[in-house]
Image (cartoon, rainbow, N blue to C red; front, side, top):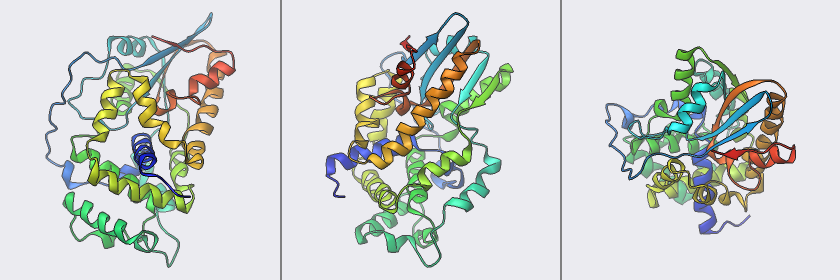
Length: 311
């Protein structure tokens, strides 16, 4: 497949924004240590998008998240706060349990025997990898990545990049809400397991894996602040901009669209349908890309007869 430049920028922004999953657990970068994140510029009160489904005995809120954020970012609106507080059950994508991380990483992150990372990448990509690692204070360490698969290195590099510009996994929406749910004694549930989430990226074709890493390296060098625009669009509830940055980039890479979005959104809608057949109030927090576009969770719910109303 031949990829054009405009598509590649959107594609990488989409994956990086969505798939900062447990793969970041093993990338403990020096760039994040002892770093005080700058106060983000914000000219308005936060209004991230929130939806609600309801029937005679059930209420379900749908909230799109960003997995890694600047700890100084003001993102929680009064509507989100109220919906979370009134919900008895909080549902996330997956547990993201650090205790299980190492075994999962070892299971899925290495190349077959005899295959090295550098042999899979173009000459320019190998040069970019060395330069980006040096940028993150890891000069001369490219050789340490040789046994690792491109999807894992790409996701890890993305985490390092976001940390370098002030992001912190501990300030991600799920981490914050999970801690609050625990303090409030709320019931917590999950739509997927940690292993299922890692299998999403590790199950991509070799072509998609390599493309993800190579284009991600280009973006870090050429458009390092693009993620800032994404976060601001999310914080202000700009669904049009979110769709352009998170979903439109998949148009020419249907394999990735199916793996990361379409199948999961369909499966989640079925699980939400089951929740609606019960009773009570549930707050569901999933990556923001799952709640935008023509194949969003809300669209699949509408096909099942459930109308998600934006609050």
